[in-house]
Amino acid sequence: MRQRLIVQMGMGVGESAGLAAERAIASAQARAVLHVDVDCAVHVTLGVPEAAELDTSGVNRAFGAAEVEVRVVPGGMSVPQPGGAALVMVSAAIEVFPLGPVA
Image 1: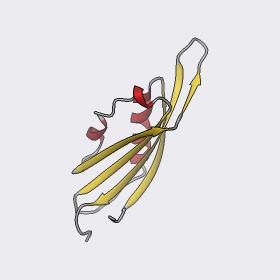
Image 2: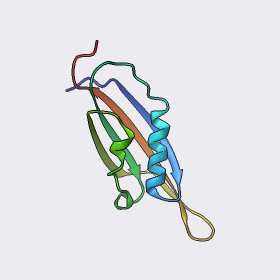
Image 3: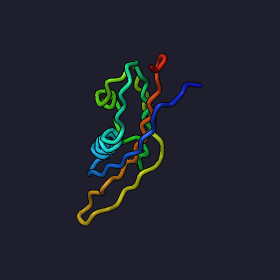
Image 4: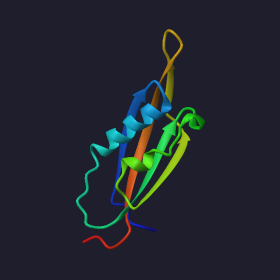
């Protein structure tokens, strides 16, 4: 089992699952700063009310890591608004693992 360097949570809200996921990832990244000189793997878990609505292909671009794994699980929240469109809340967990020895 690899040593986990950090785990950080974030939350985002938007009128689509994609926008809410982007905001959740940005929220977690804003508080997850590491200064290590080693390639890292990033595991991203997104809690989304309707997982099928979320396209995760763009998530890798948010990270400069050697490996990025994205997992979507049931979670988050969807709140109806007057007029039909719902506000979607997505939760994000970002975990960072070193791919080599950490100095």
